[in-house]
Length: 324
Image 1 (cartoon, rainbow, N blue to C red):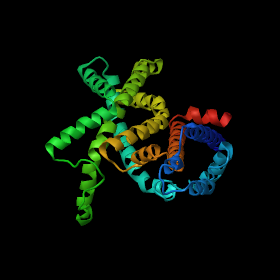
Image 2: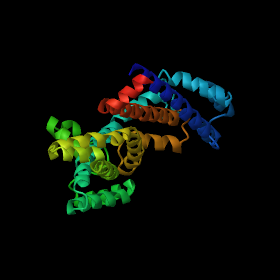
Image 3: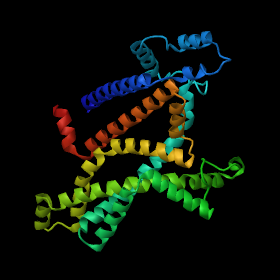
Image 4: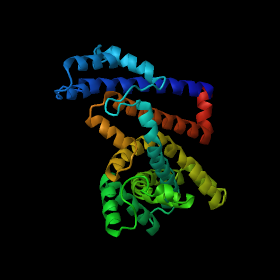
């Protein structure tokens, strides 16, 4: 397992280098930058702009700029934001908690929905229950997350029972502890519900297909022939069906991060999504790169977590890594 972890960390580092370099290259090749916008201000002299370029190292060639940024980024010094005039790491630290609040909550709820519903649908293949669960899956797989969020926002605004936008109400600090928790949950409902419904729909389909495949496998036929109870057989089916399901955790985290960014912008949730949108629109180089850097690390951690869970669930994976 130590070799397994070392190899995965090496892969993650190479991936991080590739993603950040390509992102840096694309941003630098795009026309204009934040300092070009300052040239439109007649109160800012060309000498001041040149001094800012030297200060931020933008007067050097692209490769040198990237190496300087990478050396600092590995120490989590992500530079200074042009737009906010503050350290990028501080800006991300302020917002990342809100984004994780959405993604972690929706991930847990998606799994709690997808695993039992997919298992039931696969075990009761062809029945009314199966058709109802598949209908739920088809409907929400067909909905783009942003469109579903718009629908929920319209319903919320029409009824007036739930708040629209933000993390908490203006009088949040005056509320009791229970009141603060309920207020936060009320603001989370629309974004978390949107992400959960869209994410769980695809996971249910995957779980159902895995259950059906294993249910019809020779292993289950043998267990039935030996007179093993249905409950024990279901446990074996569930354990084996979780293998392909677990490998998707990393990709699911990536999908939730990108989906959460779009939902944050739509519902006005102050997370990394809205921060990155502002950074892109203002061509804030270091803030864009900082957001991409942290997002890539979260994706790599998700993939590593998926590999570790798979090795924990399936002994064959552990044996394979030991032999390697």
